[in-house]
Length: 292
Image 1 (tube, helix red, strand yellow):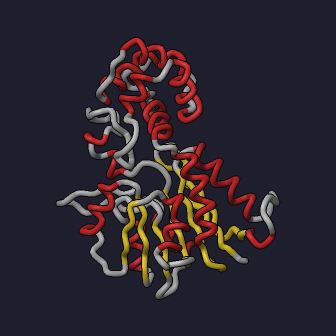
Image 2 (cartoon, helix red, strand yellow; image 1 turned 120 degrees about the horizontal axis):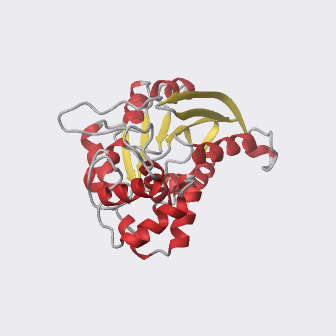
């Protein structure tokens, strides 16, 4: 994930060097950056010799900023979900590509802007929409019944105090600001100053994943990436938390033939898997090569 700023250099994604090394780009190849953000992977792909990079992002702010962040004629930016990449590439006459990178989750560009409503670190409107369309976090929290909020917190935040937090949210409605929600969660979870982790983290993650259908997007995006790759093409995926990690690892097991759910001509070969730990949260880079 990357961040932007008019006066500061964009933040470099944590595993960009690992991803680029594993993708092993050759001069003139066509690559897809499926999660453009602020263009960290795209810049690295171009520096590694890619002849063309197609950058996808559902966030219109990322696409608008990207034209000045990466002013390179070899880059084509497309505002679209990465799960649609194979369809869009075909429609534009690009066809299959040599390499695809996906860095899953919210970008620091989105986190750093309080007005986007993704962060509990600074106050802003309860929004959390990656595409700036659809239901906002405030609309969800103010209209969903308690049981639905419990389900979202449990399924997408793995929150052990989901019921208490959901009850507190319903009792405090209407909610409009991120600071309001964070304070309610902390009280309901019994947060004490100095605790290692802020319980608001899990709640904000859960609501964001739900609103943006992130896990469905990931599952569909992995399948789209497989279809979009040429034989010999490489797919690299970086995950942040366990929900994403399980989906990616299952996909890689299936496609590498350890779980034979696909016809033989759809299998892929695992060529690089690396796990690192940052701020006590695992991030994984895994790479498959399509060999048929």
